[in-house]
Length: 453
Image (cartoon, rainbow, N blue to C red; front, top):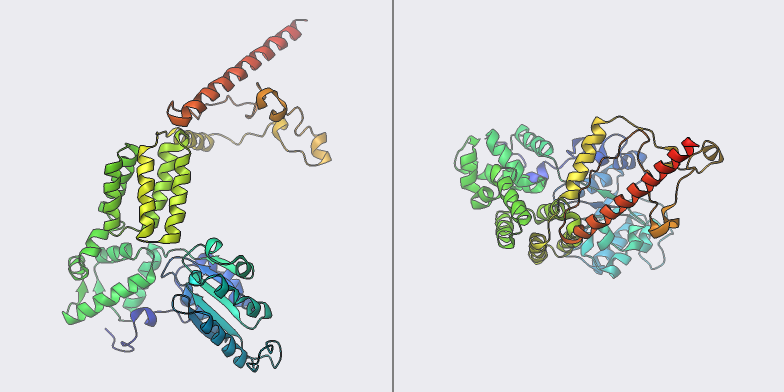
């Protein structure tokens, strides 16, 4: 391994120096994408970079400062406060050639730009966030905030309205593989066994910083033990139980989430809690578990108890606000609720059946009476003619009205179960179908009579 710049952390040595060196986030940085356009325009604008840890928020902010030859001031919202904001304002004024006198924001020669980067901006309270507003408005500096939390909830609406929001995604397995290869090309790492690479990528879980810090730990350990290759067995020995138990992406991980899902579906709250606790103890991301609970609420409970979906969404939001460990209790509460809720996969099955039907079927035209008619021409072509407005009908239901393509026999995708609220839905559906059949039968009789005359 090279000893050059070895005093620098590996993550810093591999930090991209140009936009072309950035790995991942091509939905923002690729040709024609929003951030790429911002870089190429020559005009920086205030923005908020929202994404999980280790996906490039700080790197992008630094690259923006380099691209615009701007002074780069970093404020940590975890450690900083109003004093740091004032100091940033003073530095921006000096760089622009202003004095630091009050009210001198717009006077003096136009000098170098300043970018103020606020890491974990959601940690600042309302008054601290408000302190940026007049300086963003005046153009004294460009504001860039980085956050792992939803800006809609955590950033003041006034600041949010003055900044574009860019959503960064977790790095893909391919992205993380490229980072490992890049580190190896710089002779920063020994050879790594393919199985060990896969385990490292799974452990990183889309976080480049976690990956690089782990690689650095391994590189130091390998050098001290004179290892020329990082094997999976040695990797597990060096990193210990945390790596072995996590195993995200491996068979054990997916077996465990399968056990949790089946325990909820089987209405066993104790077993569901056991597997939920096993996954957290093994290092699974609670956000991943929150997403799976939302899926269970739709797939296995559905309309038998629509509160389940709301409970899962609320649990996810609470976890985002509280984090670990406080937010995990809300997820556990959701696990128990879902396990005890009445079960139905009727909507899930109906959706799958509709998908399969549409995929196999041709593209049938929309019947004229169901088409929208916003123009005079469309009305002259009978768009929307003879459509029956359900709210004007008895009981708000246009019995006998047809909502299918003209040449298509109506399939019954949705077959509700007789459990929970869906039992009432089933009864309602049976009554509506009875009324439809009655109305169609009466129409047929009328048509036959008309034809006989």
